[in-house]
Every structure is written in structure tokens, then in C-alpha cells.
Image 1 (spheres, rainbow, N blue to C red):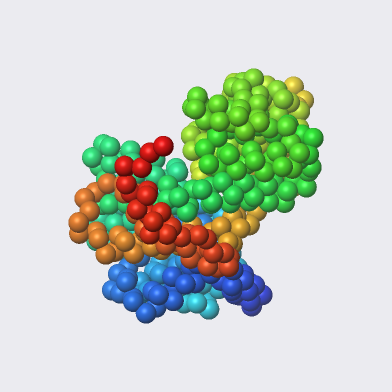
Image 2: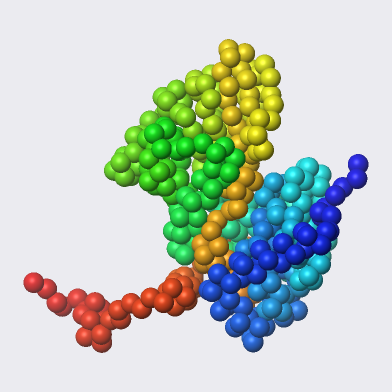
Length: 421
């Protein structure tokens, strides 16, 4: 088998890739300020950085910021269908940053790209989903001695690394980027909320208003999806396993029920849980004709594709990114982007300004790791509060917003305990 790890270079692809990267750069003021400081201070001088992220224009600006700070960077994709081929061409041919990714990679090609990153023996790794770190603890233990630490972007990946740490198998410290305030409050909620519908609109060209949309999971991603669906005029049903989140969803104005109860009502189902088989054989038989299913979680196992295939009389691509499973009872069920991340496989991913703050967290989290790894045992570490505060202040500056400051008297009042009624 011939492995194709990068797309073919054409002048048109190169030109468009550069345009996309520069457009994103022009709208990423927070990361731009950090990049300027990195160029002066060179915090990654002499360090090799291996990255496995969604390879598109915003990601490339993160990679270029790290390179400006002295890092020797290699970049691969973290999902077979989320790569923008034009951006890969530009990264390799114009910006001189080695990148191995291609939209639609098969499993062998995907893992070959990850191995190519690890062949560089990185000192620091950046993950989105945890596959790079997983390989470093399984098939590629030869590189572990070089890895000083890492950073993880997603809920899914943090869960994996925390499970490894709980079992005593994690061999290096990992920064939990996902749970930083300037990441999950904005990226997961507003980023996923907008980009999920970007993917749905592009794939289906169907209206949301007046339809029943089921959101599986009411974490920060689910909150964002439900909020935007409601704003678009959908009747939103939320399914949850956490009683507190279920109450929150109800108080936010959504109906809450089990997936089994929700499935017969659904015109759309969007999963955002980080768990597998959220839609399984029990639910496939309950979904109504022409229900559209999409996944906003990291891996393509939230919707049980084998169950869809098992009772399908025919399976066909009816539109780019839309597979129709005609069931033996005549119902047609649609799956978007083969159950992979709908916002990147069928859309453009999170908005540029949202990823500006998320990648600022990645950049400063990795800088913290580079400076402090010697004092950090293997484990999962939260982003320091001062990093969140720095990024928030930079973002406010980009937006041209000023806020109040406490007076000395107010500070004294808040720090004292003697004041009462």
C-alpha cells in the first residue's frame, strides 16, 4: 500500500493556503502579541515540539508562533477528515514548517503521520485527543525519554491522560488546556456552538427553525450547541447522564429526557459527550424517517455506525459529506461526515477569534511547561490562573475594551473580615 501523507502541491493550492493562514493571522491579535514576545524571548530555544492538531489556518498560526519562539516544530493531523489540504501545502512550501496531514487519510496514513512526528524525538508534545501521547506510551516508548511534557486541547484527551495518570502509567506532565477558563468558556461553548451549525449548514442546506434538535450532552460544548439551536428557532431536547447538568439544561429552557425517549422526536441529533455509543442499536430503530445525525465530539464512535449499517438495505452518499442509510423498514437516516467532527469535517472549524484565545492558552501553557517541567512530576496539571488572566487582558485589549479596577480602599475592604452590617 502506498501511503499518501501530504496533498499534492499546486500553485492554486499554495496561493489559497497562504491567503487562509494570513487571514487568520490578521484576526488573531492575542496570539500575535504572544508571538511578538516569543520572538524576543525565545522560550523554546533548542526544543523540539511535536504537534497533533486539526491542521487548518488557525492551527498553523499557533505552530508558527512556537517556531518564532525558537521551537523546532513538526505538525500532523489529529483527525483523518479535519485537514485543509491547501494549508498543508502552504506550511510545507511557503512557511517552511514540516507538516504531515491530508484530508481523508486512511488509518495507516493517519498513524504514519503521527509516527513521523515522533520520529523527530520531540521534547514537548501538543495533543488534540491524546493520540500522540498514547503512542508515546505504547508503540513508541523509544521516544519517551526525550519528552519533557505536553499539553492537551480537548475534553476527550484530558480524560485519556487523566486515566493514564490514575493508573500510574503517565510518564510525563501534561498541561490541561481544555479546562482553562479562556478555553472552555469560549472555545467549547461559543466555538462549538457556531461551528457545529457551520458544518450542518454546509453539509445539508436544511433549515433548523421549527425542527426538533436533540443535543446529547450538556457540557460546555452541548451548552453552546443547544444555545445556538434555540436561537435559530429549534425545539431543543437535551439528553444527559449528570443530574446537575440535566437540571441546568431544563432551567435554560430546554426539554430534558433520555435518548430513548428523545429519538422518535428528533429531526436532528448532535452528539457532544466524549463517550461512545451515545446513539446505538436501541435508538437507531426509534429514529424517525429522514433524521439527520451529526457528531461534535472528538472521535467517530459517539454514533454507532455498525448498528446503522446492520439494518441498512442500502448505503449511499447523497450529498458531499452526507451518507444515507436506508433501513429495511423504509426509513432513511442521514449521517454527516461519517460521524467525525462535523464542524471540521464539513465546516471550517471554530471561528478565528475563538481559536485565537484557545491557541494562546496552548502557547502559554507550553511555555509554562518548558520553564517548569523539572519541578513537575508525571500527571495532569491545570493552567495557572495568571495565564488565564493574561490572555483575558490581551483579548480585552484586542477588542478595545477597558474595565474598572479596584481602588485601594476596595481592595482593603475585600481582604478584611471586620466589616459587617
